[in-house]
Length: 172
Image 1 (cartoon, helix red, strand yellow):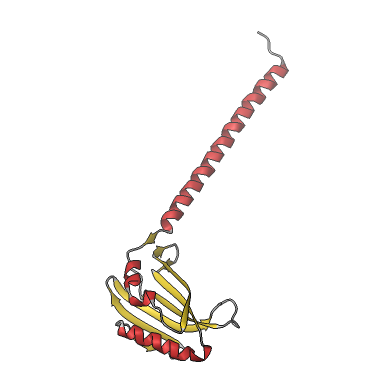
Image 2 (spheres, rainbow, N blue to C red):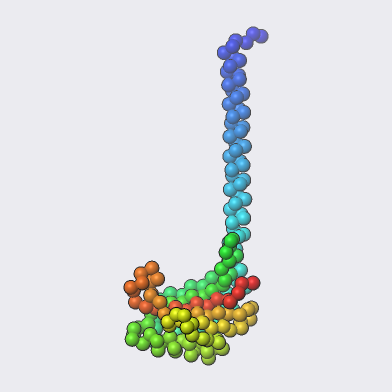
């Protein structure tokens, strides 16, 4: 059987295309595998551990309510072990003080309630209207931060709000 040059070129072209297609498929599979590994390692790196959150939520300060203040926002999250930074379990509450002229009085009232709930509170002398407290919770030393800041931190001229942060002093 005699083959013409054109037949040979066609066959080589087909075989070249087959090799090229095989290389493309191998590249796509490699990229897919690398992507899968990155996603799976990222998911484990961003895992949340709820061991510490229940201890914070059980504390009376996590659900604080009082006359003269209105809860604007409350959020909570478990301990997050993200690379390269970890984030402690935390409960954050933001309150609007209904009578701006009573901001200091409202903050002092929250401090008194915290002390009655066994928080060891002290004033942060480096900042106005800022208190920090510590308390032994079931799973570690809790930290309570109380301060008055703008309601919207991105817009400093907005009305002021009472902010309450509950977390743990140190990470496990």
